[in-house]
Image (cartoon, rainbow, N blue to C red):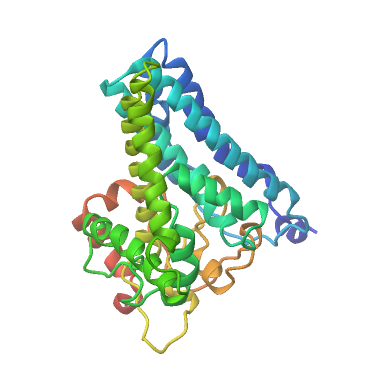
Length: 348
């Protein structure tokens, strides 16, 4: 009887923990209108508290069976998506009142870190749904809000097909550090998405990647110039803050790509296997990032929703959770020293 209870599905409310970050950021942005230091709450929580929670909460030792109903999880995705738009709105309100100060940068960092989860993680999940479906369209809105509209095309068409190969700019080699990976992967993924659409005959301005980039430039430029030219308000702080928050959201996304595939390569003719992605059962990362950490199963079964993803025995395990890996990863020699022994080719 005890074994059956232990192996029951996890209670779905644990995934509500992921809402703490956007709620803190909304409160910080609004309270920051009167006292700017409040806008730092998101930065302190994500970069300070969350790595500690990764350590304190430990790892899940016994896999649980998936729940029968995915309804609460589908609702949660929409809550994340809508809440992100509120987060973005609260940032614009703060930027309107604050103007160009150092606190604008701090608020943008907090908002960008929230966007990395509530916008990008949600868009990643919804991006695997049927094209033109409501969830898929919400994913497009979320990605536009952080200026990375080409991500779904590149991720679904190229990354899932070519993960671990040289043709996948989102798969880091063992020699790459995070900083050099950022420099190569961001333009590399955009160029890859352009090639994907070109092969379908959508060339020139008909290419969705080019059109998305154009619309993003128009949106930022309009926000920066139009309100001022109409004597409404100075739009430059809003536009600059939008660029900063989008940048930190994108860098955080690509950090996740880095740690999920770093150093794991496969032969050109080989199929993806479970051991070609890094995984972790760190509870805080799992619950707050809607099972993003069970990455091998996602590649093996891309159409399976996040609440049905399972861990695989014998796959490479990260030394720390996604939050806990952030600070070591920023110093490539530390990251490589800590992780090299865990590469399958280097294991004793």
